[in-house]
Image (cartoon, rainbow over all chains, first blue to last red; front, side, top):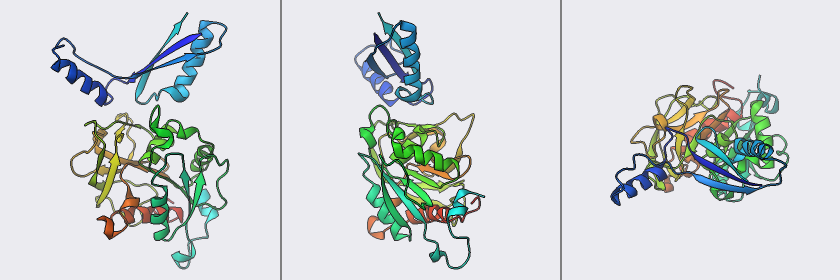
Length: 80
Length: 239
């Protein structure tokens, strides 16, 4: 099963990469962009019987290692 | 009564009789480990290097120092992988029973990731690696306050790309050090270092181990490291 994990800075946490990208987009004329937050994507392939089991394992991985809940939020997408 | 008090000789007689014994944890990518060893040894400590894969800490340690560097290449987040090293399990267990622990720069990031200190460190506000001397003001260094009165200002170098300390300001940490001049990295409330609630774990971004010799521009790191070693000997207000 394929799992996609999107990790981004928690609202209010400093995101220098996001603000650099926001500035660059604005200089390119994309003035409609009001906010940019830059994070990372982690793709996993794992053996799981059903999507729910895969999701639970991915949550555990995020809490333990992949994300730091003090500064980051994460979303988990299961690709069927 | 802390476990440290059980390990070291009781406080009497000359201080020199009670040499603190500090383990310095070395990870793949640590690069300030030898500077830390040389600085602490120069201030009278016995030091022992401890490899990150070791499953036990050497006998008789009275303190642990986690040096700066780029453990595991800073992959994922600085300190995120180092915290799962076998030796860190030992450090966590011993810190919980009062063993003094010092983390500098990457060591601070590792202590935050492991939950021994609150908060976390993110990339600098100005997106640059900052390497320069900064002034920091001593506030509440917990157990490591021997000879360090609150309000004292010290000039110590920083060198980091991910040194902006983030903390939930509604649940403030014990702030050991704050930047006294302009905030070099955008940390919350200009925090440069914090100490654990119990006062025995200290983490900071500035590098006191690089400021112990006049040849290198400042000796202001020495009082901080001396206070750490005093804490390792069982001296200090909260020891």
